[in-house]
Image: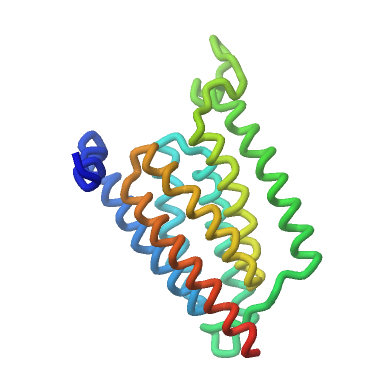
Length: 220
């Protein structure tokens, strides 16, 4: 069985609407990254459509970390939209900068806090899955596989990347590159082949984005 057959076979048991949701979310996600590379404020409205759809998709597939990060993306997209609007002369494009020491301190706190928070969510997942009842439930991380542990790490990386992007810091792309690349095998393992392809594209676009922002930073 070749890669394409393996990819399509994963979707045989999925509800049709979930496949449509995933395709739409991927398209708008790619559009969002494209606008981000161009330092265009449309990164946020297109991104919000993608993240709202992924909140539901990740919930269905049990990726709680990714679900939570998409909730965070949605909130931060509104925040970033406001910040970029205030920093744009033409209401569309913005200038970029390097992260300050304060930004790095906040980013580090967000990373550690996210590791703890998402870890706790997975710790209590048996209780959550049991409709918030402790009857016959054993708490812990015993039920996690490698993809779940990876999900905790990528969630934290994405969280910092989103914060840095809202602050127009060029370093946001470094976090996107690392996390996007890690997500490729995780999504394939979880049976989300279309999303895995999205992360391949995201990794390449994040590298381009870093180079484009760096070029603009050096020119200013």
